[in-house]
Image (tube, rainbow, N blue to C red; front, side, top):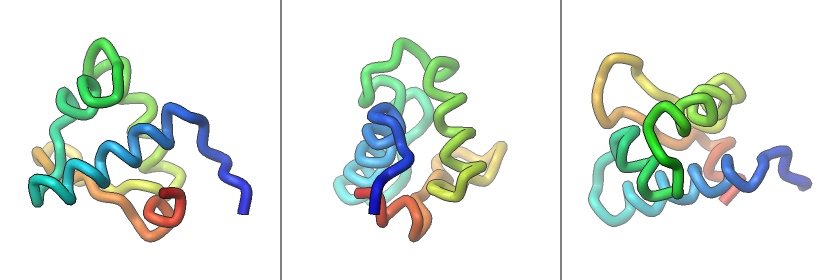
Length: 77
């Protein structure tokens, strides 16, 4: 299967997966930004929104540390 994700999206998914595996809970937006080379949360946020909208991630807005990979997201790792 050919991935439709760009390198930035793949990097974000991998970081979130690795973070959850290491710490047992989801990273914050700031941690995702720092861990994937973005300058700020605002820079990474459009990518997170795209991944949620397209079914690769799920996130409960307004609640911290609720971001998680979906089955579709796991299939891209």
